[in-house]
Image 1 (cartoon, rainbow, N blue to C red):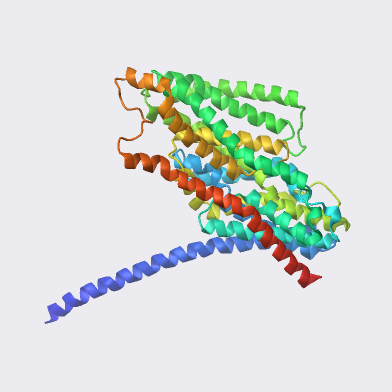
Image 2 (image 1 turned 90 degrees about the vertical axis):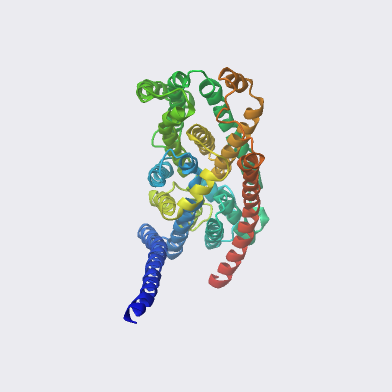
Length: 500
């Protein structure tokens, strides 16, 4: 009888222990999520304290401090949603782990924001609505606060829904809605808006075309060659040098917020010199890594891992230079408006304003970014290091170009456009490339790595399902600006009613 009781009790005890284990795991999960929220709240308080210390004696110092907290909240949402595009391709191609990707992106986001972010931030602060038309500096401050609140809330909702939206759409929609509610549609500078909208339309197409062009070059001159490794040893250093030279030219030609500024011709010469120096350094490195590798695609992927990491870092710098404006532009507008008591006053963006945006973006990425990194890197099209390198390099070139002209483009548009450009190009190239066909024949009709599966269901899974992601992302892009504008107008009217 006693033995039977023991036998009955043991399973019950095991079940109780399992329940206890599951409860403990659930508790750790909940605590981990709440830890991120707690760190975020601490950062908001730090942003308020920093703003208060620098805004002492400024008219409306409390408003500046609250706006700084909202800008910090907006920056963290940008990091959680938008920065994923920078490293998603590299993570999806398994060129780097999630942890390494997060650290690299965080460091270069901060560098890009602090060194090259001022021009676009000025555009967001003063180029969307005419500050001089506002009834008072306080009215302009409420409008900027409303824009930050509406944009940040919409991005937060999109992040929770796993939707990579355009944070640039969100903030510009917020500024338009609040500006129109504050002083009518005449306050909106529609000519500037038209230029920005055109850039939104062109930028994803440009990103896709540039990425497809790079991939075409890699396929023609490296992948479908009899000796892939020899071709890679020739051309990989050239591609890396092109990336480094373009980056150096951008920095030299106004890309450091005035710290170091050369004329365009001198900047191009400097870029050429940096490119040649990079070629001299990377050529022996690539040759050393290529020793003993077989002439197959798997070997090429190993050789492209390091360039891919470099291009992801460059894209993170470019994103920081362009998209930090979405967080600090409105804050800068409030600071300048309340500093002198006139909404039309302009000044150089204070360093503390840029620091709040730069560190906020990186903190949001580290705490909440991994989920959307997987979507961009894995679910749109199948990526390997060569394709991911094309995506990152083309995105960086397009975003850096826009930053040089102080145009607030959407890095989400460009990066996702580049990913789709690579995927669609692969479909076209698989069906139409004569070089690929000849390569397969010379190899004894062997199926090449890009060959579609003989299984129709597998072909549909690899190509057609991705188009559903395209429609979902485009739909999110379309609704973001009007939703942010309407929400911002409502928030402004509420703030204006409460505090005036």
